[in-house]
Length: 164
Image (cartoon, rainbow, N blue to C red; front, side, top):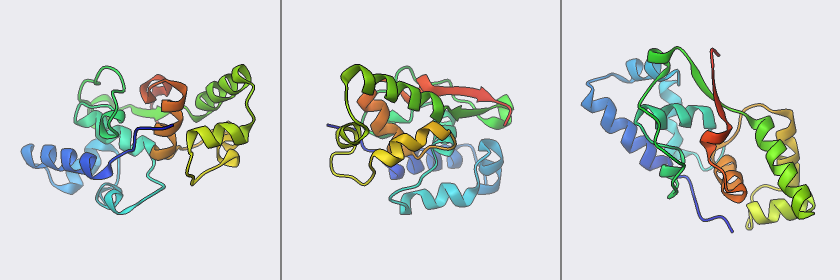
């Protein structure tokens, strides 16, 4: 049963404290992270659909893991960095996550519905969302945290740097 729940307010507060400490405007922060200011400011109002790559950029900027904002560990904290400094984006590999879920599903001889019930015991997603990971694309932070917890893996273990 999943124990971690991402706390967007905690991430926002950490980013806001760093922004103020560094004397940055929202526009400067947006450029530094490669994430729009409106995305940063609105994440605390959204219950679902917070894009993981943006969350990763913010967590990395404050030198923490995504899981540390969900009551978990997430492995060693990354060195504080940003797109403006590295010229690389940190991207989550959704297709690799799918492959890991599928391998664990096969190993345990579970159906996709059984996996979905274990990952999200009270919803809101189901087997179609898990199977949709095969297409790749962007991941939602709530889904990624729950699935990685189910796998016993960290979000960092599915990330790689890219130029775009």
